[in-house]
Image 1 (tube, rainbow, N blue to C red):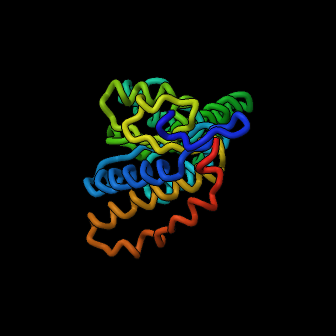
Image 2: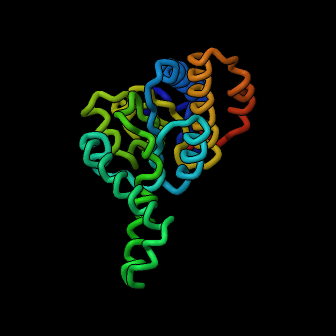
Image 3: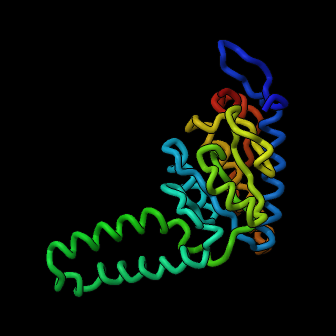
Length: 229
């Protein structure tokens, strides 16, 4: 990460904000092209600071997400993981009907636990009917299994990456603080805006109808968490 570090102060590395903006612009351009082509982009951020922002922004731009737990084989064994969604839908139908009342209290409790677990792990990818073209990751060190699966399948990775990570493992790194909530929200919002812009261009609608006004560089300066680690 040395090329992305501006200075070191009190044993804390300060990331060069110019590198953050440069990486973000590259990532936004690529995601806009992917979205314009109609491909899927999977958002991955399971750490506590990232889960809420990842879920919110992926829903806003209509893309699948993993915000709680990465299931091993989610990409490399996609067909099997996808088949588990059938069980989730079966449980949802059971809960919404009257059949559940015919089961014993113990069985009802077991089914409820199974449903909550499956919903937490699978709800974000229920719209992912094919492998994604790209992975957007927060902290590739934390999500190393997801990154490894993506690399094995040749899926492009875009990641907010801190100084404790290896940028060589990521195709489009965005150097910045991957532990700060403000930093994660800022970057994920910008990437979601880029996806919305690509989808708007495909449908022929004006970008202004779907994408919030672009934020100027002062926002990057004010979000001190995005530049420091």
